[in-house]
Structure formats: C-alpha cells, structure tokens
Amino acid sequence: AQSVAQPEDQVNVAEGNPLTVKCTYSVSGNPYLFWYVQYPNRGLQFLLKYITGDNLVKGSYGFEAEFNKSQTSFHLKKPSALVSDSALYFCAVRDMAPTGGFKTIFGAGTRLFVKA
Amino acid sequence: GAGVSQTPSNKVTEKGKYVELRCDPISGHTALYWYRQSLGQGPEFLIYFQGTGAADDSGLPNDRFFAVRPEGSVSTLKIQRTERGDSAVYLCASSPRGGKNLHEQYFGPGTRLTVT
Image (cartoon, rainbow over the protein chains, first blue to last red):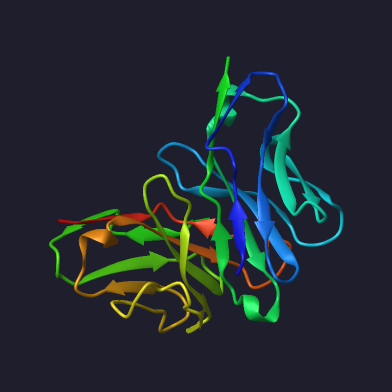
C-alpha cells in the first residue's frame, strides 16, 4: 500500500535562512509526488510536482524539491525563507502501478514557522 | 477564472440525519476528487471521478457514503445516517485531463461538517 510520511510536525527557521521540509514515501510502482501548501483560512494550493525527468523540480514562490529514489524521499526546500512562507505544508504521492488506482495519499502535514 | 466552489461552507446536522455536500469544479476539468480532512491531519482520499464515472471509490469509509457526478461536472457527496465521527472538513478538488497541469489538483475551500 502506498504511504507518505512527514517526520516533523513543525519546522522553525529564521527569515533569510534556507529551509527544508522532509517527506518520505512508499509505493509499489513509480511515484507521482506533490507538495501542497495551506495558508490560514485558505484552501490547499499546489506548489510543485515530480512526474519524471529531472530529480530537482522547481515550483511556485521559489520552492523546489529533490526526488531521491534510493532514499525514497522528496524534501521541499527554499534557499531563503520569508515570513510569508509560514503555513502548513503537505506532501502527497500517487502510485502509478496498475494496482495503484487513482488514490492520492497526503502526509499529515508540517507546520512551517519563519521568524523575522 | 473561477476556482472550485463548494456549498455549503458550513453544515451542522444531528446524528442520524442525511446530508449532501456539493462541489462545482473548474470548468473543463474532467477529474474530480473528494477528500476528508480531520483536525491536525492531511486530506484523506475518498473517491475519484473521471467524467461521470467513479474510477476509484476505495477511500469511501463505508456504505453510508456515496458520491455522484451525473453530468461530468458538478458532484454531490451524500452521507446517510450521519455519525459524530463524520465531523470533518470535506474537500473537493479538480484537475485537467491533459496539458502541463495534468495531475495538479485545484482545491475548493471545503465544507465544514459538524454532526451533533
């Protein structure tokens, strides 16, 4: 069965410092991987995705993520954090194996606090 | 253009009652997803539609939950004999059939269901 884990409930970082939000996954087939962000009182927004190709994918608001097949990880990164990046971040995976169906599995979320 | 809309935004019902939650996807999006999000958790997959048919309903928790999309656009999630454990935010998302945004899900604001 497919699953995704976000090992940190919360990440704290100072503005201007690099940030990393961790995600690991487990699927039977090839994974489609996603990051979504949820700002207070707003709906979930798509940030970026890995489907195939380059292991480093770039997304909205200066975020990027690196797909690492050997470590089954898809960590979200940003070189310089902004206070406005403070939000709840969700990693998600879809298993592209024939038995994977169309289910997208979300992690429990990591709350990012960026301090000025 | 208009995003995904969901009605009502809030619904309070008594245990044992029947409720219907509506989702209006982005025009032209053929894929539609329903999720349930409990406090402190990530979205939990319920069902996926491609066009009018439910391509994957493996996430529906039991037979009290049912969803339809009769014309391939608006979808209704129906919950019979509601229980207090059904209280959650119900999210709808849609995604396009093809193009560079394939597999990216666009979420609505959700319906907060409270069963008393």
